[in-house]
Image (cartoon, rainbow, N blue to C red; front, side, top):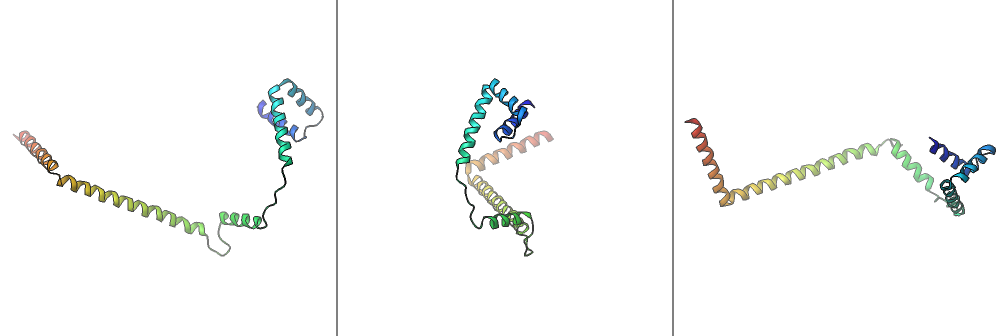
Length: 143
């Protein structure tokens, strides 16, 4: 809490908002705290540099552009069309289409891999051997 209070007092001091006893007690605290004094001096230098910067004038259409973006983010278009509600289904539809294409591609690749395994003679022999072993185990279990 004391750090927050000191930060608030430092801000007020830099803004020349501290008066009388508050300013005196803050300056006494600065004399006792070299780190705080250095921070205030650094901030004073920074503020002096910022104050020396030239004013920047906004472009003539700045207000109109900002107002248009705010209206667009707030809700429906004055013409009655809410484009954010229209664009959302298109975005969802696009994601769904991409997922369907990816799933189809993966399924086709799995089928191709299965076909390659079936065409491989060593795989076919291994599969037959496994089936014979399974049948033999089932017969032994029945006897």
